[in-house]
Image (cartoon, rainbow, N blue to C red; front, side, top):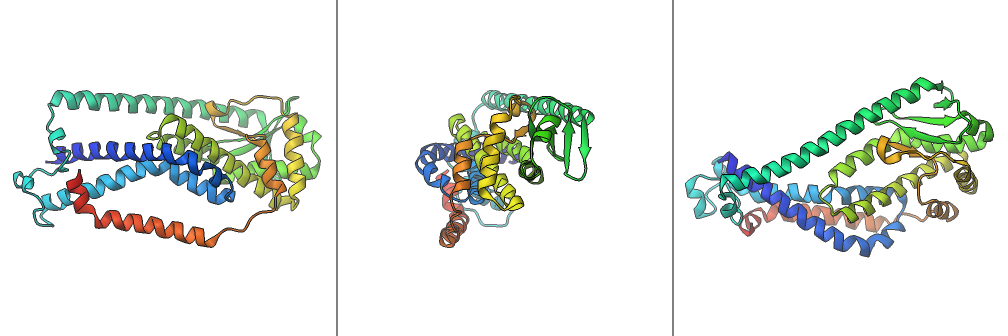
Length: 321
């Protein structure tokens, strides 16, 4: 009975997550432009939920679809369909598929397990590579406790943050010497905001959690999330020096100076120049727009209604499947 419940749940999870990913691929291009006009912090939260949506919706609907079977098998509720007279927990529509031959199930589970093991192998290699890179940076860098940065003796121009659980900012000695005190405040405030938010770890987790999305949609969402994170840290720099125009000028000047490419995707580095410089500058030059409280309220209400509706439709959802 437990095996049948697990098999039904796995099928339901893949089915619902696939539907959510398909809906996301169709819907996101239509709302993307409107989304970019929202404040960066709200946009970051929406994109985070959007990246998690296939996995979350798949788990949520699979759970509530299986709830009648689980309750019936534990004698908490009365029988809800005749098929339960055999004592096997199931999802009604998926029940015939569950009884496929063991060879088909073994083949399917083997494929899924192989993909998961390969992803875990890549993830472990990435963590090892990142740990060595972080250890090397701290070994060659000189900590500046007052400014909260590691200074690396180098003739190149670079500044970036790196680290998963204990991130730090790193800057070259040459760039540090070239910057004025106010420019240095902008740069360090930006990178320290990345460190405080643990953006490297956040992006790594979301890139793994968003694997149910179609590759093109996933890439767009992660790219837009990266832009939102950069803009949030730009705002942190504005709060430090209280001059939006100066922060914009500093970003442009330093982006022209930085001449050392950094392998961001391979070892978890967030460089100051980041991405979408033009959009970031545009945001800094525009006056911040007030948050529409009604939109936030109705969005929250919509989520509550959706969750409550799924809970209320647990039995019909079970028989639908």
